Length: 157
Image (tube, rainbow, N blue to C red; front, side, top):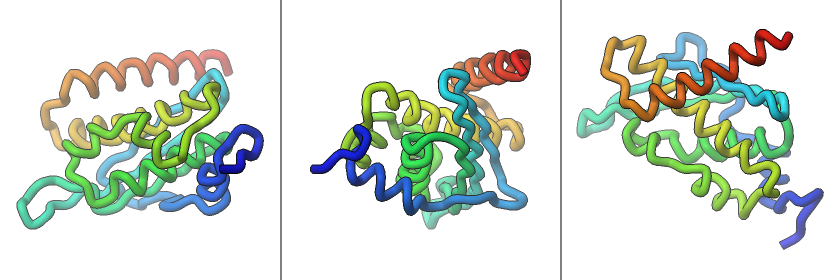
């Protein structure tokens, strides 16, 4: 496996040709996250539907990522991993799942996979809140952390 600037060929391929990029007008959910450490920003847009078993699934997903190679690659991979999945199953995806698909990430770029997961969790949080549904504690914790970071970023600028 050849590496370019510490990135696997897979990371570079996805960076050059990311999937599910853009915005969904009238999305059922939107999650926005940012990292003060590197300046990356991600917005994740979800359309939620139901499968034949009436489970809530992610029918469509788009992401807008402003950031480095790893941020773009991790958010793209995550959209592929969650499209068509039940919400409950999508919430179980981990940074290790994303890193595995990418054949690894440089150590200093692991946080990009966490940022992508946070964007997903923020969008699911948004969906549940919009629909006045109970929000699991894990999503509340992520939301509170993201909100604190966002306020810190906004205050600094």
